[in-house]
Image (cartoon, rainbow, N blue to C red; front, top):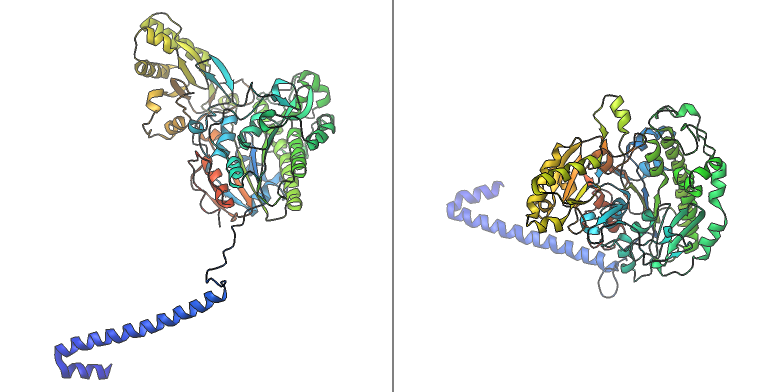
Length: 582
């Protein structure tokens, strides 16, 4: 530096400028030499790891051998926290501690029912696009009620009862299973299993190999329909049915699994907010299920006990073995839904000892099933996700007595008020065709005959019903088409709105209000107690952790698609959950 300073003193400013550019040139040459050396070294390293062509030997994308999707019917995230101390280490705790939890995941539409919920999980979209707008909906053209899985064109396989005439014919978008089948050139197998037909059929999708559900009633059988190309049940299903598991479980009765002192997270056993089984006067343990069969539709009784979940696990293991799922060189999908939690929640409520005992037992069943997967498929070779189709409301009669704001709604009062309003303003007519799922269907023919404007009538009815006790908000159908609503509740109504299937006016109830009996509970609202559900991911491709970022139910399907590197369901509107995928 001293020599450079002396040189600058001798040559002046012009010389200083020349010196500057000379130094820059030298530095550039040195940099070029260094970069060339680095490049030559990199090429040498690359050459040692490539073939003759000089291209890297690309490894094929790894995929799990098996995907297991679990939907727990009417499960609230709080159940994991409430019953944590009563759980073992191999069930829910294993998935939470060793997997990923999306702890702030909600349904982004209304109504929060079983059919739409199961469809949304696997399609990654809402009723507005997958066509499952409710469990049952009114069809304006026929004037009839349509059940979401009923298909009169199909025939039962394994049972001749109408309960077997089911299919996914009303599902209008693809599922994870459908995309997996297409991606694998139809080599992957997709099976749906649940006590409820809709819990098995809608998750599996239209292209599934099979969906099986429990018939109940007079038949202790699992069955399917000819939608899936079968004329007879596979031998493994016949073998399972021949074992008479329903009769075996009912003979066990239902007693508390743990000592009574463990059930401090629930109400007392005998309380006024629960409904007893038919044939007894008090909803208290133990239950003699065999004695109750005759008054509770025989094998249907098993659905409303933890034994329904136990049988579902047994059947799922039989399906894995019978179909060789996870052992055929391609990724397979098993869709499982635990239905008994919903039956018990409806009858006894979310704070009952019955619901706590059910989840304690489900935890054991889940742990046993995961251990079976470890052996059958291999640890780290399968991915499991667990969520719910909806939550459940606290029983309003209990909330009212405790001083909370909650009550019961009667839609018949709303119907009478709408009819009277339109009669008085426009003359007597049958103005309402139907009211169901908080959808009001107006008589378009009567409106047209009087040359009235449909949009105007929709607006008038929407405004008028706000005076009905219990109604929170109302939305005219024309306002839900296209325009973006600003409120969270309004958006959930809009994403549940189907232009061909929904009503002319949709309304919501006040928080805590339900249309139901005075015992037990139900669901269907756009509020957090119904929309907030667990979302656990475990196994292949899952980075352990937790997020409290807002997520929607539509994010589950793209997350699994990303882990398995398969296409998204065709109407998917969700995104992979950040942090899960490595």
